[in-house]
Length: 522
Image 1: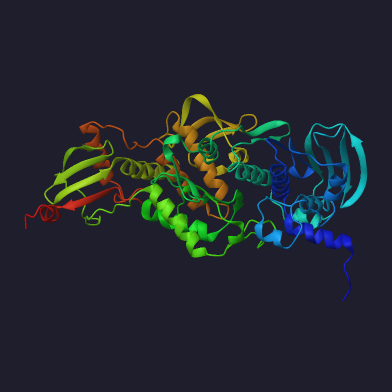
Image 2 (image 1 turned 90 degrees about the vertical axis):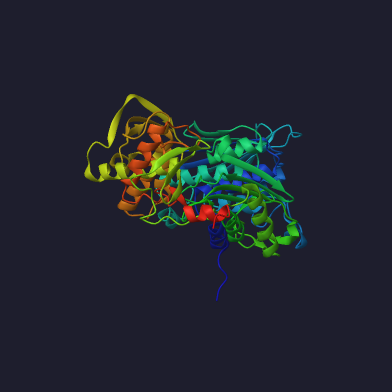
């Protein structure tokens, strides 16, 4: 046995907290928030490893604190073992800066408002190189250069630069959700990729989740504040953000409570978009389970689960499952069906000799479009159509790098990069028109970003599903009798008319005998 050199100990400690560029951004931004910042600017280079800078207008540090901050096991946020049981801040500035400094070349420029001049601290590989006076605005700017220059093995485990930047953008979005009072700006190569000015909590969440006002629910009860996508809106990847006392955490308990409350309101294998903000006494949880404080342990998991489940259930409203016979291959309308009308501008009402059918017009049109587009894609004939004028579509920074994926052309998109964070669409799947082109492109790119290990056929089918959904007849859209009759006939010609591509039923039947039982006509 022998004692490890201090430099090796520092590198090991840094490796527990700093695994990739996004971890640097997380720690630095959390420090800025704890310092009372109201404006935070994150700048990264291309490649991300070369330079990361986080500047804030927070309280700043004195010369003495700035020097202490890059030493291990130094912090202004805890002083005793008891303090660990009631942590309310996001991070420990000294611990974060020391870990980052151990694996980079770091510059800290900081000044308190009451100080006449600022302080510059230079650290290289954990070694203090210089401390000097320097002009500085109030606040702190930490610049991290050449990340992992002294641990090259760490670089080998990183993804391509576009993936690492996408993780940075996701990290900034996660941190920004509960702090709608703070102005966040993310720049790459001096071009703004994300700008989030102060706004209401609802506006901040809808902007980050990319949901319209009509598609987002907000609900509060006791210590639970939640934002939820409306039933019927779902996504192929997890878009659930959970926070406890303002800190983003990963918790299977919280995630399970949300998903179980949705129940059958979303198709199997899909996810809602949700933001959960939970307030708890710090003594009722342990945030020190994970070095990055992502994971959390609750003292009373059952009580937490119940509180979240009940709040989400109340927000979504009752889940009504009609007492109707299931749809089998023979229970669709006969050739003798008659269109009675349209209910709520959403459901087509049919009758035949066996009873009444309700057809969900959006789900039915989705099924028709999906099979039609999939057949054309697989045969390679006429599935793409030129737009009358090329369309510019704005993209989040994490999706723009995926524009070159060959799957886009397979399903009918012809796109090219158009500056930073935008795409120029020249052709689109022939089923799409107008604004649905942009929405469909963004959704397909989101699917591509989350399906890294899926096979080409699976990706193709998912892409066609998304393109089929966009542009399908919407719920709430009035239809003429001729259009309703045509829609039902085309649906019955499909290979699988009973469900939409996502697995939702396209129709339900209420049999004559069930109707008679309802009204006592036995």
